[in-house]
Image (cartoon, rainbow, N blue to C red; front, side, top):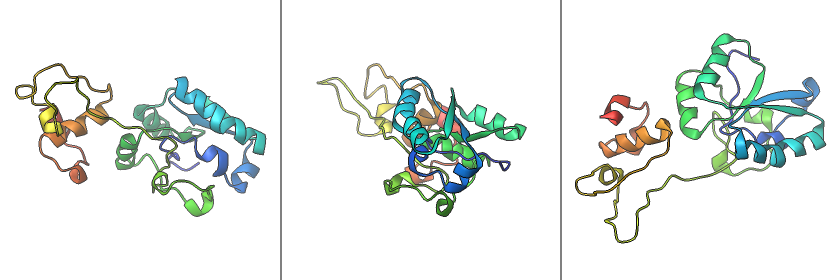
Length: 191
């Protein structure tokens, strides 16, 4: 393995159809760091078990995964991890830190996949959204600037417990256009 580890934006998708014959010939076991819990169990059922039945390759799951863990693995140079699950926002951070490499799609030769799941530095296997919601009859915020405006929009707020989601919301509220969010101005987000 090279200095950088190969990272999938939730790397389970390639376990079914992306592993090449070269990988199959070289290894009967690969390591994957993933989130664990129900997500990890779905990866096991949907991707890992079919991969094993088709190729005999075992996938050893480890959890949890985080940007800090990825960084420690890469900087130690002593990793045998092949796949690392990260969210799309965290992949941007990992890329900026030089922790991941581009995917060689010609070598990977995946089974058909949605074009938006096939990215330069990773690949996706699930979709979700973070949305604003409010109770019936409440004044409806139309932007993150309004969401964070507690004077014009009184009431409680809740946000995901993931700074890599919330800080971009706060930066958008401060007027940063979405296409210019990264590199993220963390100080502005906290302000």
